[in-house]
Amino acid sequence: MKVFILTGAGISAESGLGTFRDKEGLWARFDPMKLATPEAFERDPEKVLAFYNMRRQNLLAASPNAAHRALARLEAGLKERGGSLFLCTQNIDDLHERAGSQEVTHMHGELLKVRCIACEAVTSWQDDVDVDTPCPSCRRTGVLRPHVVWFGEMPLFMEAIYDALLEADLFVAIGTSGSVYPAAGFVAEARAAGIRTCEINLEPSDNARLFDEGRFGPASVTVPEWVERLLA
Ligand code: OAD
Image 1: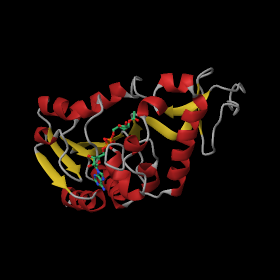
Image 2 (image 1 turned 180 degrees about the vertical axis):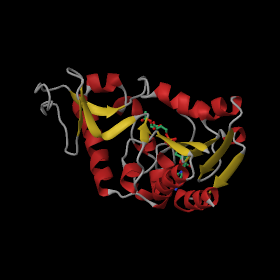
Image 3 (image 1 turned 30 degrees about the vertical axis):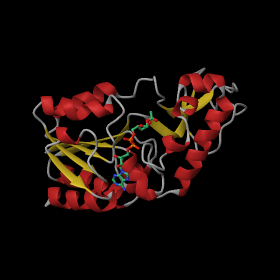
Image 4 (image 1 turned 135 degrees about the vertical axis):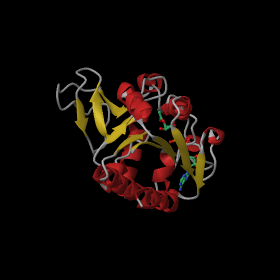
């Protein structure tokens, strides 16, 4: 069996990273247009870098939860049975990797990497960044940005993602509100291709009617239960 999973902020919520659109979410407290667009970075790079420095420090203090670990077990279990898992995440955290997932496609980039807008080098990064931090490759300053996708930018790896999606036997969305495209459109694409669809979320998302099946509750409970059932 080939399984395609799309994860969102909800899977990392119980690791303490918070979501975007819930009442206490990041976008309720911060204006994404002032912090997560290329225009915002041009206008006020220090402010944008400080926002991602804060998020990077929060991530370094966080740990994967039972839902991340269950998806790592699922990857290994499907492989043993001759199947495969394509794990596509909108999350920029590395909690899937730290839980043991071997292959993770980060369509919105990765918080623990920086990219140079001059030489385009991508470098693993755990420290704070400011406008005076030199690029480790070309040594220029004022050129480092977080290696994340901002509003108005094209998500990464889209060709490989659509190939994997359309080859899958099952599409599962976990912990995502389904409000940001193109990821929000995956369920409709999967349905149109005759692929079975399942939503695992705290509560039904706005796209819930597009899924064949829904499992609701905290990811740390619902995801391990679902994985054990699928592998049984
Ligand atoms: P959202 O904040 O939009 O949605 C999070 C979803 O997780 C909601 O449906 C919540 O109900 C659900 N949720 C919350 N706690 C949960 C829990 N413990 N277990 C299971 N589900 C839970 O986050 P995303 O859908 O990931 O992009 O947001 C998509 C994109 O919008 C992000 O990648 C980010 C953001 O703007 C960029 O920054 C480009």
